[in-house]
Amino acid sequence: MPSTATHTVDAPHAADAPLIVMEDVNKWYGAYHALRDVNLSVRRGEKIVLCGPSGSGKSTLIRCINHLETIKSGRITVDGVRLDDSTRSVDAVRSEVGMVFQNFNLFPHMTVLQNCTLAPMRVRGVTVAAAEATAKRFLERVRIAEHAHKYPAQLSGGQQQRVAIARALCMEPKVMLFDEPTSALDPEMVKEVLDTMVSLARDGMTMVCVTHEMGFARQVADRVIFMADGQILEQADPESFFRHPTHPRARSFLGEILAHH
Amino acid sequence: MGTTFGLGELGFLIQGLKWTVLLAAIAFVGGGIGGLGVALARVSTSKPLRRITGGYIALFQGTPLLMQLFVIYYGLGLMGLMLPAWVAVAIAFTLHASAFLGEIWRGAIEALPKGQFEAARALGLHYVPRMRDVILPQALRIALPATIGFLVQLIKGTSLAAIVGFIELARAGQIVSNQTYAPLLVFTVVGALYFALCWPLSLYGSRIEGRIARATAR
Image (tube, rainbow over all chains, first blue to last red; front, side, top):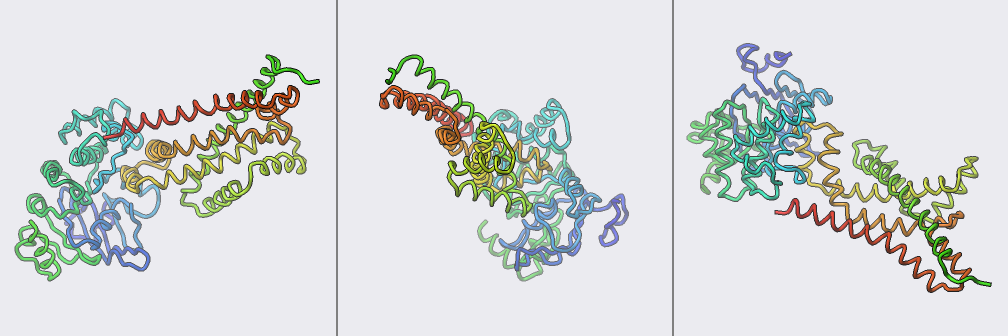
């Protein structure tokens, strides 16, 4: 099963099979072609930064990985599980894929701790005590354990986003998807969230991040992927990408965002 | 001729009040369960389910409660289903309340940010825990003022059950008034009894609302 998709990717052997494989993925919103023949494979432990102008399909791409969006054609395989529209494959994939959203999306009627224990209890069936122990461990890790009994609205944006990261980690996912995790934050809170993400990366988490934080990309990314108009136009290690972007769209994009930094 | 308004008459009104409370309780419980089903059907992915419940809501919101009581009470009888009056009335009130509560709660569910559904999905939560633990607690909170408002209306609406022979509070008041020729006194008492029933409910609603608002306020 884990090797079903390896014939199209550059993995040398099955034990080293990529964690995520997207093959010829196409996605439409009505008449709008949101993803065009996207091919992407993510190795275990790899950190990928997706960038590109707004509307380029980067968020759509990562939302397809955990089936928040359905695709029109192509294949997506996560940890050997082929995503079809069956509940079984969707469940299997979602329980291994953590996601952090731009707007945090914490559950406002639950405390920080309850936010973190809900899914492990309901999805994995662990006991309250075990779920709370795991939650406290991850809340500690994002340095927010002292706020465990507060409600999300009592926390700052940066704190909320760190809770959202802890909540996703409590499912002990194999990969974490970040959808512009710092875009809704006040500037002074960006760093605390990025620091958390950097430490996560250092611990070997597989990460796919949609972000415009190019400093973060330089620091942790193994690969930077540039998208425009629903296509992957360029991918390279951060050094080459930032120094010598080859595609004209990538050059003008970098020119624009770096001018503001 | 007429009697004066005494303890016996007050007791008669209290008997009526008991029916009013019972009818309202049945409508609350029945409408709560039915309304939840209707709301979930209205936001489901199944188009037929959404259509059917949409039609049902339109029908019950678009016709007077009085007529609904008539049709169900006499209609079921004509269909050969001879039910005790209170059962027919309970069915009518349950159907009525389910339509209104279903629509109120549907609106509240749809008013929640899409991110709440997505976060629950992304965490792998299935339909039941997603709705029970994440969506409904938030939606019911949003819907609380409208829900309480409707329930208060419903309590007062139970007076229409008099049409099929029920001696609930309003009808009891009418009878006592006819016997005592003291309509002003009698209906003041009736009004006070309705108020004593409805006001604590409104008060309770705003207290809960305030408590939840404080708990989640920044």
